[in-house]
Length: 336
Image 1 (cartoon, rainbow, N blue to C red):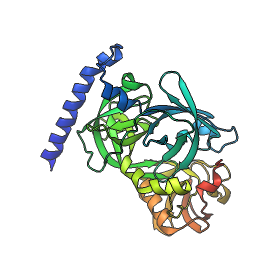
Image 2 (cartoon, rainbow, N blue to C red):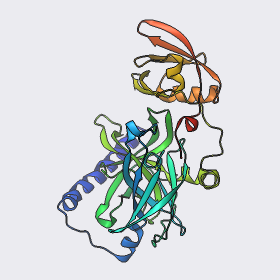
Image 3 (cartoon, helix red, strand yellow):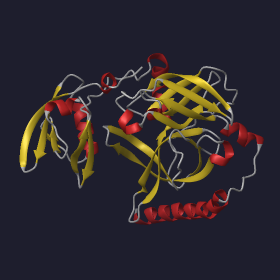
Image 4 (cartoon, rainbow, N blue to C red):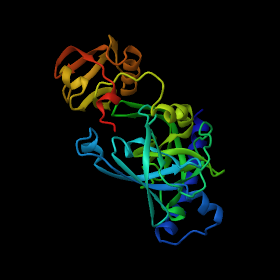
């Protein structure tokens, strides 16, 4: 096992070294050779501009003017992106090429996966990008990352990890795709395999894409296979048909296995129940909590929206038992 891990690290390091050798060419502004097929493929990556009302729940954290990318995936102008770009937006504009912009209709937002869907209100006249398969993407695979901007916005990347991603906003994504080096235009960017197919959607830049003795910064991508699981539901009703998960409105961080409350959603269930920043969650529904991922999984297994959830809280040196009436995040958001 140790030898296999060492070989895996060597393969990753070699691929990264090659990319770093090529990076100065990209930084110098030299344009890579273009082919009609490359132009046609990357034309499916469009720009997005979203306007969000000032009273939206996410306005303070995500802003009221958001920009990123999306990918056209069918001939009707259906576009997939990362959901936070369009969350609670009142207006979205799609940018196609250098000088054309068309309005778009928001179709769906799925909190469990993080995807958002919209449809251009006028023909975008690009070849849709095919959905690939992300299940077999593994460490050492070389892929292409591209935000809006055509071939000049495309960069090579190496998959450095496949593991669960735990977000502080009560979010858990299993087998997320982590790549390096970091790509700055990550929001809604396309992760493309060697067949020119979409295998992931850009979500975040992270400091530990590669978890080792020397962590490597990079990006986290949502695997496209997760979109396939919910696409029909999103097109039909704007969200997954699965029952909504219980939501507490806790924004936490993990320190040595301890789940510490950093802040709380305004008017959220936890804030209304007396949970405070600085509290440490050590149990849920009578079961001990050993990590943030463990906390989420036990919370989701123990309750549904509307249920009273017992939490064991460490407040300073005191242990307290609180009951929080779980909410539904979709109802809390001010969705159009």
